[in-house]
Structures are given as structure tokens and as C-alpha cells.
Image (cartoon, rainbow, N blue to C red):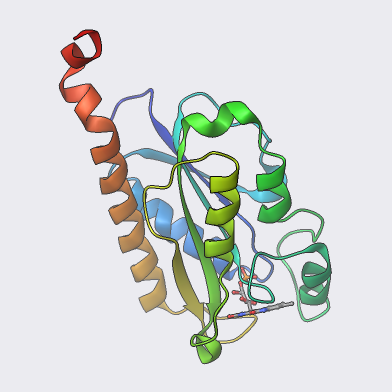
Length: 188
Ligand SMILES: Cc1cc2nc3c(=O)[nH]c(=O)nc-3n(C[C@H](O)[C@H](O)[C@H](O)COP(=O)(O)O)c2cc1C
């Protein structure tokens, strides 16, 4: 699928830079199927461009869910952060314009390896929020693991993220291709 009228957008939140690395690895995998932009959540407008058919949203798991202003402030007190604590994916999803629902969605998060058995995932919370806003999902939410709260994220996890990006790209291709392969069906 190299059509110019189809693009993917990855919107990510990251405090210590790990989710940012994961977002870039997912982009590398997704680009095998579709042109993909990666945008930090505090720089992303509330309305998606018309040609964005896939929206991928990711952020760090904070207190078993998506971050809040209080948990981001907590993170800022723990180490150097790569983005301001003001906006996270929770607030961005809540503010998304209705016309954006043309895109299908997939979500991911980062979590700490040591507590991987604990429940609670920003990706699962994000997908629930997006469904409440009327979006259709095309892949299960996925978690990628960091060694400790501030990282690092291993090369193996980044490779897993790249592979997940490829998988989501294949799902998008399948989602779109029946209409493209059989345009006559639209008028039947
Ligand atoms: C306030 C706060 C709460 C956190 N809560 C959780 C949690 O409930 N579960 C978990 O696995 N990791 C938790 N973590 C670790 C984060 O998931 C980790 O810092 C994040 O994945 C790193 O990504 P980033 O560098 O993109 O911010 C928490 C971190 C902070 C700062």
C-alpha cells in the first residue's frame, strides 16, 4: 500500500524517553505498509488530517493506567523528562475532534518489567477511552517493557515494537484492501 492518500499517525507521550523510542521502532515496522508520522502528544492537534486512516496512541503506564497531571508531576520529580507534564494521551483523547473517527486505532504502552504480573496498562485504558469516543480498533493493545521506571528499554523490546508495527500495518492493509481491490463493489 503505497497510496499517497493513506497515512498513519503515531501519537505518543513519554516522560523519560522510553515510550518515544518504542514509538519510533513501531514507526519503522509500520512504514513497511504505510507512510507514518510520529508526533509528541503535546504537539499534536485535536483534529486528525483527513488522510490519516490509522491512529496509533501510546504512553507510559502510570498508577495502573494512563498518566494524569499528578503522576506526570511525580515523574518530573524522579529524573530528567523529555516533554512537559501538562498534556498526556488521556487529555488528548478526551479532546479529540469527532471527525477524526475516520481512522482506525491501535494502542501501546510501556511498563516496568519487574511488575509485569501486576494488572493495569495505559494501552488498555487508552483503547477503552478511544472506543467510548466511537473509534474502531484493529489490533490488541500491546505493552513493551522497560528495565526500571526511568528505563532503559532493551534492544529486544525495541525489536518487538518494530514487529508489532509490522503486524498493525498488515491489519491496516487487510482492513482497507477489500474496497481498493474491488472498487466495483461500492456501486453494486
Ligand atoms: C508516577 C509513576 C507511576 C508509575 N506506575 C506504574 C505502574 O502502575 N505500572 C508499571 O508497570 N509501571 C509504572 N511506572 C513506570 C512507568 O511505566 C515507566 O516510567 C515508563 O514506562 C517509562 O516510559 P517513559 O520513559 O516514556 O516515561 C510508573 C512511573 C511513574 C513515574
